[in-house]
Image (cartoon, rainbow, N blue to C red):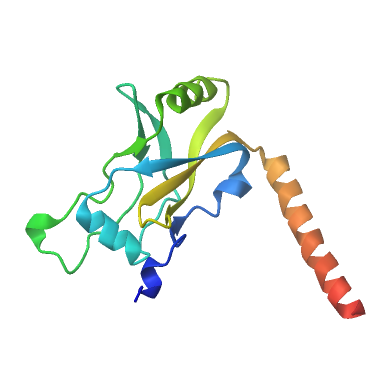
Amino acid sequence: MARADSAPGRIAAQNRRARFDYFIEDTLEAGIVLAGTEVKSLRGGRGSINESYAGEQNGELFLFNAYIPEYQLAGRFFQHEVRRPRKLLVRSRQLARLLTSIQREGMTLVPLSIYFNDRGLAKVELGIAKGKKKGDKRETEKERDWQRDKARLMRAKG
């Protein structure tokens, strides 16, 4: 019998602020190399990728500044470093395409979510993003408020 916290497609960490702060032009899925205690901590839903980003280091793709807390049930000897760079697994063609796109003006790789797929493997959804200016953020907020008010009016009319 499967446990509820290991259900397929379960989101372990999500960066909700990314879609507000950036224009997401393209998304892709990447594998992530994790230690055993990191996986157990993520299955508990305690990770955070709000301030993290992805980038190149020595010709490979890494996730920087992602916070995965220590797993409390493991001993002190088996713990991992909470903000260490974590290697991302992508195909070489995808890596070449990503590196050329982030070298362009104002483009960055932003992790949108960390989730477990149907096989139980941890995956990262990356977005190729361009930063928004303050006016763009205001437009996004106005649009969201209008959609909320429109839904409220439609519900009221029945």
